[in-house]
Length: 194
Image (cartoon, rainbow, N blue to C red; front, side, top):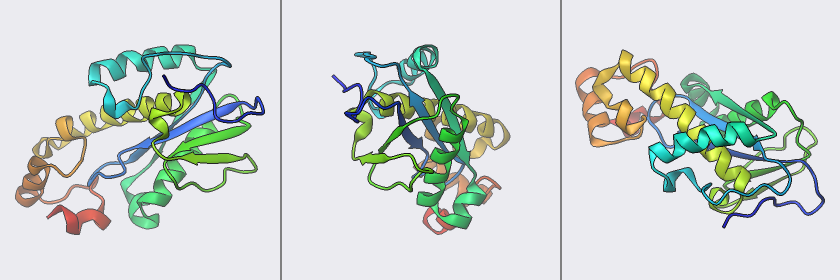
């Protein structure tokens, strides 16, 4: 069972996670979620451990139950300009900016983050499998990014983005070899795409 909150001071805590960091194409998405005090949900878990159907069902639950939630995006062009780590953090900051309730503490999946204004934060490796708010954020980031990649697939059907979400699969690499790069490909990853 995942833990409700990390901080012990009773602060309003937002969980953050991103999706799409290891992709060759598309924006990186991040979500921030504030859950009610004492919230429990035994079905919430790291989005990677859930089926797509489960993720989408849980997205509705999270959006209904959360005190506040938001999604932030950094584009492929921004990723090329500032690198994927900084773009992932930028997307998280943008998600936090859009929250209707200001968090007093932020917990982040992983081991890297930059301070968000004056709000204290804690990075937690594999946090999406430890804390409910990070698990919820991972589900929102993943499903909203998948929706976006499905839309891009309609425009560029050669790369299998409806199935691989822009990750470097065999079909994606073959699509690049045959059709070249799109405006959505991350040029800083292009050398690894061939």
